[in-house]
Image (cartoon, rainbow, N blue to C red; front, side, top):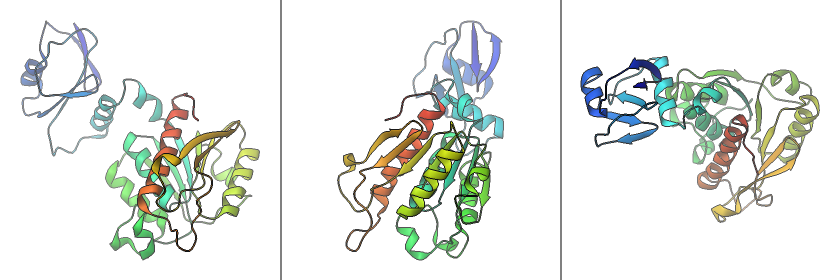
Length: 268
Protein backbone atom coordinates (compact mmCIF):
# COMPACT_ATOMS: atom_id res chain seq x y z
CA UNK A 1 0.00 0.00 0.00
CA UNK A 2 1.36 3.44 -0.97
CA UNK A 3 0.28 6.64 0.77
CA UNK A 4 1.49 10.24 1.15
CA UNK A 5 2.52 11.36 4.63
CA UNK A 6 2.75 15.16 4.91
CA UNK A 7 2.67 15.20 1.10
CA UNK A 8 5.68 12.86 0.81
CA UNK A 9 5.42 9.28 -0.44
CA UNK A 10 6.44 6.82 2.25
CA UNK A 11 6.47 3.76 0.03
CA UNK A 12 4.81 0.42 0.47
CA UNK A 13 3.19 -0.21 3.83
CA UNK A 14 1.40 -3.17 5.30
CA UNK A 15 -2.31 -2.81 5.97
CA UNK A 16 -2.48 -0.11 8.66
CA UNK A 17 -4.87 2.29 10.41
CA UNK A 18 -4.55 6.04 10.82
CA UNK A 19 -3.92 5.78 14.55
CA UNK A 20 -1.34 3.05 14.09
CA UNK A 21 0.55 5.23 11.62
CA UNK A 22 0.46 8.14 14.05
CA UNK A 23 1.72 5.98 16.92
CA UNK A 24 4.56 4.69 14.80
CA UNK A 25 5.65 7.95 13.09
CA UNK A 26 4.59 10.90 15.29
CA UNK A 27 2.97 9.77 18.53
CA UNK A 28 2.64 13.34 19.89
CA UNK A 29 0.49 14.43 16.93
CA UNK A 30 -2.92 15.60 18.12
CA UNK A 31 -4.36 16.68 14.75
CA UNK A 32 -4.77 13.96 12.14
CA UNK A 33 -5.85 14.95 8.64
CA UNK A 34 -6.88 12.34 6.08
CA UNK A 35 -7.43 13.46 2.49
CA UNK A 36 -8.02 17.05 3.58
CA UNK A 37 -10.36 16.32 6.50
CA UNK A 38 -9.47 16.29 10.22
CA UNK A 39 -10.50 13.05 11.90
CA UNK A 40 -10.90 12.10 15.55
CA UNK A 41 -11.75 8.46 14.94
CA UNK A 42 -9.51 5.72 13.62
CA UNK A 43 -9.77 4.69 10.00
CA UNK A 44 -8.25 1.94 7.89
CA UNK A 45 -5.84 3.45 5.36
CA UNK A 46 -6.16 2.58 1.69
CA UNK A 47 -4.05 2.99 -1.44
CA UNK A 48 -3.43 6.63 -2.37
CA UNK A 49 -4.49 8.16 0.96
CA UNK A 50 -2.93 11.50 2.00
CA UNK A 51 -2.18 11.81 5.71
CA UNK A 52 -0.92 14.79 7.69
CA UNK A 53 0.15 14.52 11.33
CA UNK A 54 0.29 17.78 13.32
CA UNK A 55 1.18 18.70 16.88
CA UNK A 56 -0.62 21.80 18.17
CA UNK A 57 1.63 24.79 18.84
CA UNK A 58 4.50 23.45 16.75
CA UNK A 59 5.93 25.99 14.30
CA UNK A 60 6.45 24.10 11.05
CA UNK A 61 9.27 24.47 8.59
CA UNK A 62 8.47 25.85 5.14
CA UNK A 63 8.18 22.36 3.67
CA UNK A 64 6.01 21.20 6.57
CA UNK A 65 3.74 24.25 6.34
CA UNK A 66 3.26 23.71 2.63
CA UNK A 67 2.41 20.08 3.17
CA UNK A 68 -0.06 20.95 5.93
CA UNK A 69 -1.73 23.59 3.79
CA UNK A 70 -1.90 21.19 0.89
CA UNK A 71 -3.53 18.64 3.15
CA UNK A 72 -6.23 21.13 4.13
CA UNK A 73 -6.93 22.08 0.53
CA UNK A 74 -8.39 19.91 -2.16
CA UNK A 75 -5.49 17.72 -3.38
CA UNK A 76 -3.62 19.52 -6.15
CA UNK A 77 -4.88 23.01 -5.33
CA UNK A 78 -1.87 24.13 -3.31
CA UNK A 79 0.56 22.96 -5.97
CA UNK A 80 -1.18 25.20 -8.53
CA UNK A 81 -1.32 28.35 -6.44
CA UNK A 82 2.03 28.34 -4.64
CA UNK A 83 3.77 29.33 -7.88
CA UNK A 84 1.31 32.12 -8.67
CA UNK A 85 1.87 35.86 -8.44
CA UNK A 86 -1.00 38.26 -7.67
CA UNK A 87 -0.86 42.05 -7.81
CA UNK A 88 -2.92 44.19 -5.41
CA UNK A 89 -3.33 47.89 -6.13
CA UNK A 90 -4.35 49.54 -2.88
CA UNK A 91 -3.86 48.23 0.66
CA UNK A 92 -6.95 49.60 2.36
CA UNK A 93 -10.15 47.80 3.30
CA UNK A 94 -10.32 45.67 0.18
CA UNK A 95 -6.63 45.23 -0.59
CA UNK A 96 -5.46 44.36 2.92
CA UNK A 97 -8.21 41.75 3.34
CA UNK A 98 -7.59 40.26 -0.10
CA UNK A 99 -3.87 40.00 0.70
CA UNK A 100 -4.56 38.25 4.02
CA UNK A 101 -6.89 35.74 2.36
CA UNK A 102 -4.40 34.97 -0.41
CA UNK A 103 -1.52 34.59 2.05
CA UNK A 104 -3.58 32.16 4.10
CA UNK A 105 -4.25 29.93 1.10
CA UNK A 106 -0.56 29.99 0.14
CA UNK A 107 -0.37 32.07 -3.03
CA UNK A 108 3.36 32.18 -3.64
CA UNK A 109 3.98 35.86 -4.39
CA UNK A 110 2.09 39.09 -3.77
CA UNK A 111 2.96 42.49 -5.21
CA UNK A 112 1.22 45.10 -3.07
CA UNK A 113 1.21 48.84 -3.81
CA UNK A 114 -0.02 51.88 -1.90
CA UNK A 115 1.40 55.33 -1.06
CA UNK A 116 -0.68 55.95 2.07
CA UNK A 117 0.02 55.48 5.79
CA UNK A 118 -2.11 53.73 8.41
CA UNK A 119 -4.52 56.21 10.05
CA UNK A 120 -6.81 55.72 13.06
CA UNK A 121 -9.91 55.82 10.83
CA UNK A 122 -8.55 52.85 8.84
CA UNK A 123 -8.89 50.51 11.79
CA UNK A 124 -12.68 50.20 11.39
CA UNK A 125 -12.22 47.91 8.38
CA UNK A 126 -8.57 47.47 7.37
CA UNK A 127 -6.20 44.68 8.41
CA UNK A 128 -3.91 46.76 10.60
CA UNK A 129 -3.33 47.29 14.33
CA UNK A 130 -3.27 50.32 16.63
CA UNK A 131 0.50 50.14 17.06
CA UNK A 132 0.93 50.42 13.28
CA UNK A 133 -0.66 53.87 13.00
CA UNK A 134 1.69 56.12 11.04
CA UNK A 135 3.47 53.30 9.21
CA UNK A 136 3.30 53.06 5.43
CA UNK A 137 0.45 50.68 4.66
CA UNK A 138 2.59 48.41 2.50
CA UNK A 139 5.17 48.06 5.29
CA UNK A 140 2.54 47.31 7.92
CA UNK A 141 0.70 44.86 5.68
CA UNK A 142 3.90 43.06 4.72
CA UNK A 143 4.70 42.64 8.44
CA UNK A 144 1.24 41.23 9.13
CA UNK A 145 1.38 38.85 6.19
CA UNK A 146 4.75 37.55 7.34
CA UNK A 147 3.19 36.61 10.68
CA UNK A 148 0.41 34.71 8.90
CA UNK A 149 2.57 32.94 6.33
CA UNK A 150 6.29 33.79 6.41
CA UNK A 151 6.90 31.88 3.20
CA UNK A 152 4.79 34.08 0.92
CA UNK A 153 7.08 36.42 -1.02
CA UNK A 154 5.74 39.97 -0.66
CA UNK A 155 7.02 42.83 -2.81
CA UNK A 156 5.88 46.05 -1.15
CA UNK A 157 5.73 49.15 -3.39
CA UNK A 158 5.40 52.35 -1.36
CA UNK A 159 4.42 54.64 -4.22
CA UNK A 160 1.52 56.21 -6.09
CA UNK A 161 0.34 54.15 -9.04
CA UNK A 162 -0.42 55.84 -12.33
CA UNK A 163 -1.25 54.86 -15.89
CA UNK A 164 2.41 54.85 -16.87
CA UNK A 165 3.98 52.74 -14.10
CA UNK A 166 1.22 50.15 -13.66
CA UNK A 167 2.11 47.99 -16.71
CA UNK A 168 5.77 47.62 -15.74
CA UNK A 169 5.16 47.08 -12.03
CA UNK A 170 2.57 44.34 -12.56
CA UNK A 171 3.76 42.76 -15.82
CA UNK A 172 4.59 39.45 -14.12
CA UNK A 173 1.34 38.87 -12.22
CA UNK A 174 -1.05 36.05 -13.05
CA UNK A 175 -4.04 38.01 -11.74
CA UNK A 176 -4.43 41.69 -10.83
CA UNK A 177 -6.67 43.06 -8.04
CA UNK A 178 -7.98 46.63 -8.05
CA UNK A 179 -8.62 47.84 -4.48
CA UNK A 180 -8.77 51.63 -4.69
CA UNK A 181 -11.34 53.92 -3.06
CA UNK A 182 -11.74 56.64 -5.67
CA UNK A 183 -13.76 55.99 -8.83
CA UNK A 184 -11.31 57.85 -11.07
CA UNK A 185 -8.40 55.77 -9.79
CA UNK A 186 -10.37 52.56 -10.33
CA UNK A 187 -11.06 53.56 -13.93
CA UNK A 188 -7.44 54.59 -14.49
CA UNK A 189 -6.07 51.26 -13.28
CA UNK A 190 -8.58 49.22 -15.26
CA UNK A 191 -7.82 51.11 -18.46
CA UNK A 192 -4.05 50.95 -18.03
CA UNK A 193 -3.81 47.33 -16.96
CA UNK A 194 -6.31 45.80 -19.39
CA UNK A 195 -4.92 47.67 -22.39
CA UNK A 196 -1.21 47.31 -21.66
CA UNK A 197 -0.94 43.97 -19.85
CA UNK A 198 -2.86 41.83 -22.32
CA UNK A 199 -4.21 38.43 -21.42
CA UNK A 200 -4.05 38.95 -17.64
CA UNK A 201 -7.34 39.09 -15.69
CA UNK A 202 -8.33 42.01 -13.47
CA UNK A 203 -10.64 41.66 -10.45
CA UNK A 204 -12.06 45.02 -9.36
CA UNK A 205 -14.56 46.24 -6.77
CA UNK A 206 -17.40 48.77 -6.93
CA UNK A 207 -20.38 49.37 -4.64
CA UNK A 208 -19.73 48.03 -1.14
CA UNK A 209 -20.42 50.83 1.32
CA UNK A 210 -22.81 50.76 4.25
CA UNK A 211 -24.66 47.77 5.67
CA UNK A 212 -26.99 46.73 2.85
CA UNK A 213 -27.76 42.98 2.55
CA UNK A 214 -24.74 40.75 2.06
CA UNK A 215 -26.29 38.93 -0.88
CA UNK A 216 -26.50 42.12 -2.91
CA UNK A 217 -22.73 41.85 -3.41
CA UNK A 218 -22.06 39.83 -6.55
CA UNK A 219 -19.10 38.79 -8.67
CA UNK A 220 -19.75 39.46 -12.34
CA UNK A 221 -17.75 39.09 -15.52
CA UNK A 222 -17.99 42.42 -17.30
CA UNK A 223 -15.36 41.95 -19.99
CA UNK A 224 -13.04 39.38 -21.54
CA UNK A 225 -10.55 39.58 -18.66
CA UNK A 226 -12.46 41.92 -16.37
CA UNK A 227 -14.38 40.85 -13.26
CA UNK A 228 -16.30 43.21 -10.97
CA UNK A 229 -17.31 42.61 -7.34
CA UNK A 230 -19.98 44.64 -5.53
CA UNK A 231 -23.46 45.96 -6.13
CA UNK A 232 -22.27 48.75 -8.44
CA UNK A 233 -24.27 51.36 -6.51
CA UNK A 234 -23.46 51.92 -2.83
CA UNK A 235 -20.57 54.36 -2.82
CA UNK A 236 -19.31 55.87 0.43
CA UNK A 237 -20.97 59.23 1.18
CA UNK A 238 -22.19 61.22 4.19
CA UNK A 239 -24.45 58.94 6.20
CA UNK A 240 -23.17 55.79 4.50
CA UNK A 241 -19.60 54.92 5.32
CA UNK A 242 -17.34 51.97 4.67
CA UNK A 243 -17.68 49.27 7.32
CA UNK A 244 -15.76 46.08 8.02
CA UNK A 245 -18.49 43.46 7.39
CA UNK A 246 -19.54 44.48 3.89
CA UNK A 247 -16.04 45.52 2.81
CA UNK A 248 -14.78 42.16 4.08
CA UNK A 249 -17.44 40.26 2.14
CA UNK A 250 -16.49 42.08 -1.05
CA UNK A 251 -12.77 41.50 -0.43
CA UNK A 252 -13.34 37.78 -0.02
CA UNK A 253 -15.43 37.75 -3.19
CA UNK A 254 -12.36 39.21 -4.88
CA UNK A 255 -9.99 36.73 -3.26
CA UNK A 256 -12.20 33.81 -4.25
CA UNK A 257 -12.39 35.10 -7.81
CA UNK A 258 -8.58 35.25 -7.86
CA UNK A 259 -8.37 31.68 -6.58
CA UNK A 260 -10.82 30.43 -9.20
CA UNK A 261 -8.90 32.19 -11.97
CA UNK A 262 -5.62 30.67 -10.80
CA UNK A 263 -7.26 27.24 -10.86
CA UNK A 264 -8.72 27.76 -14.34
CA UNK A 265 -12.32 27.88 -13.13
CA UNK A 266 -15.15 30.05 -14.44
CA UNK A 267 -15.84 33.29 -12.55
CA UNK A 268 -19.11 35.22 -12.61
